[in-house]
Image (tube, rainbow, N blue to C red; front, side, top):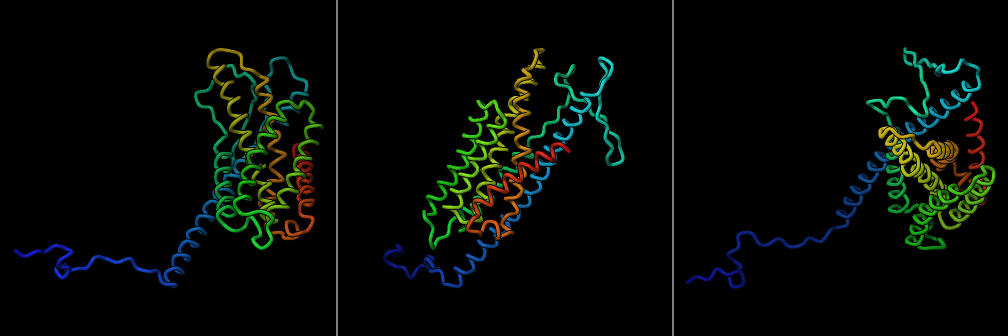
Length: 302
Protein backbone atom coordinates (compact mmCIF):
# COMPACT_ATOMS: atom_id res chain seq x y z
CA UNK A 1 0.00 0.00 0.00
CA UNK A 2 1.39 3.36 -1.03
CA UNK A 3 2.22 5.65 1.88
CA UNK A 4 1.64 9.31 1.03
CA UNK A 5 2.49 10.69 4.48
CA UNK A 6 4.16 14.06 4.68
CA UNK A 7 7.21 12.81 6.48
CA UNK A 8 7.87 9.81 4.26
CA UNK A 9 7.19 11.22 0.80
CA UNK A 10 7.52 14.98 0.60
CA UNK A 11 7.83 14.64 -3.18
CA UNK A 12 4.04 14.23 -3.38
CA UNK A 13 3.47 17.94 -2.50
CA UNK A 14 2.69 19.84 -5.67
CA UNK A 15 3.40 23.18 -3.89
CA UNK A 16 5.88 23.12 -1.03
CA UNK A 17 4.79 24.80 2.26
CA UNK A 18 5.63 28.53 2.26
CA UNK A 19 8.76 29.46 4.13
CA UNK A 20 9.14 32.69 6.14
CA UNK A 21 10.84 35.35 4.03
CA UNK A 22 13.53 37.60 5.44
CA UNK A 23 12.80 41.26 4.84
CA UNK A 24 15.36 42.89 2.63
CA UNK A 25 16.57 46.43 3.34
CA UNK A 26 14.40 47.69 0.50
CA UNK A 27 11.35 46.07 2.15
CA UNK A 28 12.07 47.82 5.45
CA UNK A 29 12.37 51.12 3.65
CA UNK A 30 9.03 50.55 1.94
CA UNK A 31 7.30 49.70 5.24
CA UNK A 32 8.85 52.74 6.93
CA UNK A 33 7.76 54.98 4.08
CA UNK A 34 4.19 53.62 4.28
CA UNK A 35 4.09 54.13 8.05
CA UNK A 36 5.45 57.66 7.70
CA UNK A 37 2.91 58.50 5.02
CA UNK A 38 0.04 57.10 7.11
CA UNK A 39 1.21 59.03 10.16
CA UNK A 40 1.41 62.22 8.12
CA UNK A 41 -2.15 61.85 6.86
CA UNK A 42 -3.34 61.02 10.37
CA UNK A 43 -1.62 64.15 11.66
CA UNK A 44 -3.26 66.24 8.94
CA UNK A 45 -6.72 64.87 9.78
CA UNK A 46 -6.29 65.41 13.52
CA UNK A 47 -4.84 68.89 13.14
CA UNK A 48 -7.56 69.95 10.70
CA UNK A 49 -10.35 68.70 12.95
CA UNK A 50 -8.66 70.15 16.04
CA UNK A 51 -8.29 73.64 14.59
CA UNK A 52 -11.80 73.77 13.14
CA UNK A 53 -13.47 72.47 16.31
CA UNK A 54 -11.39 74.95 18.32
CA UNK A 55 -12.58 77.81 16.13
CA UNK A 56 -16.21 76.86 16.81
CA UNK A 57 -15.58 76.45 20.55
CA UNK A 58 -13.69 79.71 21.03
CA UNK A 59 -16.12 81.58 18.78
CA UNK A 60 -19.15 80.38 20.75
CA UNK A 61 -17.43 81.15 24.07
CA UNK A 62 -16.62 84.74 23.14
CA UNK A 63 -20.00 85.27 21.49
CA UNK A 64 -21.80 84.44 24.73
CA UNK A 65 -19.26 86.50 26.68
CA UNK A 66 -20.09 89.47 24.46
CA UNK A 67 -23.82 88.73 24.78
CA UNK A 68 -23.64 88.67 28.58
CA UNK A 69 -21.83 92.01 28.48
CA UNK A 70 -24.65 93.55 26.46
CA UNK A 71 -27.26 92.25 28.90
CA UNK A 72 -25.29 93.71 31.81
CA UNK A 73 -25.40 97.08 30.05
CA UNK A 74 -29.15 96.73 29.44
CA UNK A 75 -29.72 95.94 33.11
CA UNK A 76 -28.31 99.35 34.04
CA UNK A 77 -30.72 101.20 31.75
CA UNK A 78 -34.01 102.42 33.29
CA UNK A 79 -37.10 100.62 32.04
CA UNK A 80 -40.73 100.12 33.15
CA UNK A 81 -41.22 97.17 35.53
CA UNK A 82 -41.73 93.90 33.71
CA UNK A 83 -40.55 95.16 30.35
CA UNK A 84 -38.49 92.63 28.47
CA UNK A 85 -35.07 93.63 27.25
CA UNK A 86 -33.60 92.24 24.05
CA UNK A 87 -30.20 92.37 22.43
CA UNK A 88 -30.74 93.09 18.76
CA UNK A 89 -28.31 91.84 16.12
CA UNK A 90 -28.14 91.81 12.35
CA UNK A 91 -26.32 89.11 10.43
CA UNK A 92 -26.58 87.14 7.18
CA UNK A 93 -29.55 89.11 5.90
CA UNK A 94 -31.67 88.75 9.02
CA UNK A 95 -32.39 90.39 12.37
CA UNK A 96 -32.12 88.57 15.69
CA UNK A 97 -33.69 89.57 19.02
CA UNK A 98 -32.22 87.64 21.95
CA UNK A 99 -33.67 87.59 25.46
CA UNK A 100 -31.87 86.20 28.51
CA UNK A 101 -33.88 84.31 31.14
CA UNK A 102 -32.22 82.95 34.26
CA UNK A 103 -35.38 80.97 35.04
CA UNK A 104 -37.50 80.40 31.90
CA UNK A 105 -41.24 80.41 32.39
CA UNK A 106 -41.69 77.66 29.81
CA UNK A 107 -39.24 74.96 28.83
CA UNK A 108 -38.77 74.86 25.05
CA UNK A 109 -39.21 71.67 23.10
CA UNK A 110 -35.68 71.96 21.74
CA UNK A 111 -32.85 73.30 23.87
CA UNK A 112 -29.55 73.86 22.06
CA UNK A 113 -26.41 72.89 23.97
CA UNK A 114 -22.88 73.99 23.14
CA UNK A 115 -20.70 71.09 24.18
CA UNK A 116 -19.40 68.99 21.29
CA UNK A 117 -17.06 71.73 20.12
CA UNK A 118 -15.16 71.43 23.41
CA UNK A 119 -15.16 67.64 23.39
CA UNK A 120 -13.93 67.29 19.81
CA UNK A 121 -11.28 69.97 20.30
CA UNK A 122 -9.84 68.23 23.35
CA UNK A 123 -9.96 64.69 21.95
CA UNK A 124 -8.28 65.62 18.67
CA UNK A 125 -5.77 67.79 20.50
CA UNK A 126 -4.73 65.05 22.92
CA UNK A 127 -4.47 62.50 20.10
CA UNK A 128 -2.34 64.91 18.08
CA UNK A 129 -0.17 65.66 21.12
CA UNK A 130 0.36 61.95 21.74
CA UNK A 131 1.11 61.24 18.09
CA UNK A 132 3.75 63.96 17.83
CA UNK A 133 5.37 63.87 21.26
CA UNK A 134 4.70 60.45 22.80
CA UNK A 135 4.87 58.31 19.66
CA UNK A 136 7.20 60.67 17.81
CA UNK A 137 10.57 61.86 18.97
CA UNK A 138 9.85 65.46 19.88
CA UNK A 139 9.25 65.18 23.63
CA UNK A 140 12.88 65.11 24.78
CA UNK A 141 16.31 65.76 23.35
CA UNK A 142 17.82 62.26 23.16
CA UNK A 143 21.39 63.56 23.18
CA UNK A 144 21.34 65.25 26.58
CA UNK A 145 17.88 64.66 28.06
CA UNK A 146 17.87 64.63 31.87
CA UNK A 147 15.21 61.87 31.89
CA UNK A 148 14.26 58.92 29.70
CA UNK A 149 11.43 59.05 27.18
CA UNK A 150 9.26 56.82 29.38
CA UNK A 151 9.80 59.05 32.39
CA UNK A 152 9.08 62.12 30.28
CA UNK A 153 5.78 60.66 29.09
CA UNK A 154 4.88 59.84 32.70
CA UNK A 155 5.73 63.39 33.77
CA UNK A 156 3.69 64.81 30.89
CA UNK A 157 0.59 62.76 31.72
CA UNK A 158 1.01 63.54 35.42
CA UNK A 159 1.12 67.27 34.71
CA UNK A 160 -2.01 67.06 32.55
CA UNK A 161 -3.92 65.42 35.39
CA UNK A 162 -2.38 67.50 38.18
CA UNK A 163 -3.14 70.74 36.37
CA UNK A 164 -6.88 70.06 36.40
CA UNK A 165 -6.98 68.65 39.95
CA UNK A 166 -5.03 71.56 41.48
CA UNK A 167 -7.00 74.18 39.53
CA UNK A 168 -10.39 72.63 40.30
CA UNK A 169 -9.79 72.15 44.03
CA UNK A 170 -8.28 75.60 44.42
CA UNK A 171 -11.18 77.45 42.79
CA UNK A 172 -13.75 75.48 44.78
CA UNK A 173 -12.51 77.17 47.93
CA UNK A 174 -10.91 80.42 46.72
CA UNK A 175 -13.26 83.38 47.15
CA UNK A 176 -10.90 86.15 46.02
CA UNK A 177 -10.30 86.65 42.30
CA UNK A 178 -7.09 88.60 42.93
CA UNK A 179 -5.65 85.90 45.18
CA UNK A 180 -6.77 83.20 42.76
CA UNK A 181 -5.08 84.84 39.78
CA UNK A 182 -1.83 85.35 41.73
CA UNK A 183 -1.68 81.74 42.93
CA UNK A 184 -2.58 80.36 39.51
CA UNK A 185 0.06 82.47 37.82
CA UNK A 186 2.69 81.26 40.28
CA UNK A 187 1.65 77.71 39.39
CA UNK A 188 1.97 78.55 35.68
CA UNK A 189 5.50 79.92 36.17
CA UNK A 190 6.55 76.82 38.12
CA UNK A 191 5.03 74.51 35.52
CA UNK A 192 6.72 76.42 32.69
CA UNK A 193 10.09 76.00 34.39
CA UNK A 194 9.56 72.27 34.95
CA UNK A 195 8.44 71.68 31.36
CA UNK A 196 11.33 73.64 29.85
CA UNK A 197 13.82 71.82 32.10
CA UNK A 198 12.78 68.27 31.17
CA UNK A 199 11.20 68.57 27.71
CA UNK A 200 12.35 70.11 24.46
CA UNK A 201 11.34 73.74 24.01
CA UNK A 202 8.67 72.82 21.47
CA UNK A 203 7.23 70.12 23.70
CA UNK A 204 7.33 72.34 26.79
CA UNK A 205 5.20 75.01 25.16
CA UNK A 206 2.74 72.47 23.79
CA UNK A 207 2.61 70.71 27.16
CA UNK A 208 1.45 73.88 28.90
CA UNK A 209 -1.08 74.44 26.11
CA UNK A 210 -2.36 70.88 26.53
CA UNK A 211 -2.71 71.45 30.28
CA UNK A 212 -4.70 74.62 29.70
CA UNK A 213 -6.85 72.89 27.08
CA UNK A 214 -7.55 70.02 29.46
CA UNK A 215 -8.66 72.46 32.16
CA UNK A 216 -10.95 74.22 29.68
CA UNK A 217 -12.55 71.00 28.43
CA UNK A 218 -12.96 69.67 31.97
CA UNK A 219 -14.61 72.94 32.97
CA UNK A 220 -17.18 72.40 30.23
CA UNK A 221 -17.85 68.70 30.71
CA UNK A 222 -17.36 68.30 34.47
CA UNK A 223 -18.53 71.62 35.90
CA UNK A 224 -20.61 73.67 33.44
CA UNK A 225 -22.71 71.01 31.69
CA UNK A 226 -23.60 69.00 34.86
CA UNK A 227 -24.76 72.21 36.58
CA UNK A 228 -26.89 73.13 33.58
CA UNK A 229 -28.38 69.63 33.40
CA UNK A 230 -29.40 69.83 37.06
CA UNK A 231 -31.00 73.23 36.46
CA UNK A 232 -32.95 71.87 33.47
CA UNK A 233 -34.03 68.81 35.47
CA UNK A 234 -35.29 71.05 38.29
CA UNK A 235 -37.33 73.15 35.86
CA UNK A 236 -38.86 70.06 34.27
CA UNK A 237 -39.80 68.84 37.75
CA UNK A 238 -41.47 72.16 38.51
CA UNK A 239 -38.82 73.12 41.07
CA UNK A 240 -36.74 76.25 41.49
CA UNK A 241 -33.25 75.71 40.01
CA UNK A 242 -30.19 76.42 42.10
CA UNK A 243 -29.01 79.77 40.74
CA UNK A 244 -25.76 79.52 42.71
CA UNK A 245 -24.82 76.53 40.56
CA UNK A 246 -25.48 78.62 37.50
CA UNK A 247 -23.24 81.37 38.86
CA UNK A 248 -20.41 78.89 39.51
CA UNK A 249 -20.79 77.50 36.00
CA UNK A 250 -20.57 81.02 34.59
CA UNK A 251 -17.37 81.60 36.58
CA UNK A 252 -15.77 78.55 34.96
CA UNK A 253 -16.88 79.78 31.55
CA UNK A 254 -15.30 83.14 32.38
CA UNK A 255 -12.05 81.38 33.28
CA UNK A 256 -12.06 79.68 29.89
CA UNK A 257 -12.11 83.05 28.11
CA UNK A 258 -8.88 83.94 29.91
CA UNK A 259 -7.20 80.57 29.44
CA UNK A 260 -7.89 80.31 25.72
CA UNK A 261 -5.60 83.15 24.61
CA UNK A 262 -2.43 81.49 25.97
CA UNK A 263 -3.65 78.21 24.45
CA UNK A 264 -3.88 79.79 21.01
CA UNK A 265 -0.35 81.14 21.41
CA UNK A 266 1.05 77.71 22.28
CA UNK A 267 -0.69 76.30 19.19
CA UNK A 268 1.29 78.66 16.93
CA UNK A 269 4.46 78.87 19.05
CA UNK A 270 6.31 76.15 17.14
CA UNK A 271 6.65 78.58 14.22
CA UNK A 272 8.74 80.96 16.35
CA UNK A 273 12.00 79.43 17.51
CA UNK A 274 12.96 82.68 19.19
CA UNK A 275 10.48 81.80 21.95
CA UNK A 276 10.80 78.09 22.71
CA UNK A 277 14.44 77.94 21.54
CA UNK A 278 15.67 80.70 23.84
CA UNK A 279 17.69 79.92 26.98
CA UNK A 280 15.01 81.95 28.78
CA UNK A 281 12.14 80.04 27.16
CA UNK A 282 10.31 79.42 30.42
CA UNK A 283 10.40 83.13 31.29
CA UNK A 284 9.13 84.04 27.82
CA UNK A 285 6.34 81.48 28.10
CA UNK A 286 5.31 82.74 31.54
CA UNK A 287 5.33 86.34 30.33
CA UNK A 288 3.23 85.56 27.25
CA UNK A 289 0.65 83.75 29.40
CA UNK A 290 0.29 86.96 31.41
CA UNK A 291 -0.02 88.97 28.19
CA UNK A 292 -2.78 86.60 27.09
CA UNK A 293 -4.68 87.07 30.34
CA UNK A 294 -4.43 90.86 30.13
CA UNK A 295 -5.56 90.76 26.50
CA UNK A 296 -8.56 88.63 27.47
CA UNK A 297 -9.48 91.20 30.11
CA UNK A 298 -9.49 93.93 27.46
CA UNK A 299 -11.44 91.80 24.97
CA UNK A 300 -14.10 91.01 27.57
CA UNK A 301 -14.68 94.75 28.07
CA UNK A 302 -15.08 95.42 24.33
